[in-house]
Length: 248
Image (tube, rainbow, N blue to C red):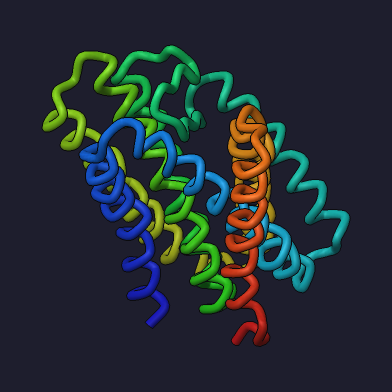
């Protein structure tokens, strides 16, 4: 059952996200510019909720808190370095100039990021189905606006819509590869699972705090701020729903 759920959520977070982003780009630009910040606000909430309500508490159950927090800290520093190397980059807006990177480099970085997402999904489901579903929802939520940004970068790099869709889809499939490999590896190395949980939490925290939330700060109107706050809480609330019952 868990392997089936891992496959479903890894495909939703990869193929599903690319397909959803492709449909988003068919909308008028002004509509896209209005909707993407809403998606980003919701995604930030799901990532924060999954990290603080699911991944970190679950890691606490198996290894000392000092080891968990040290791993989270190391992970945040690691993702900072990887982002500098354009291996862990994010773009969640239409006019993205996140690294001014060429199309092929974006695709390589995305493949690496998606591979890590697959590992995160598998590790979470090994910890329990509610944790896995909540983590999978967080991955899907933040992948859709990211894929919108990826499309924008590829189109600006001279790719046709068809070619950008094809290459983005191929890059996204590493999520499935990472999930399957991690599932069969981590089930035999149970002691590594809590550390993977902590690293997963650090990636969620880094994306939400260093990328998503700062990107929303430029929209300072009262209505926009209220909408962002409500959607942020909604994202956390969705994750909370999966943690009302203990993990199996």
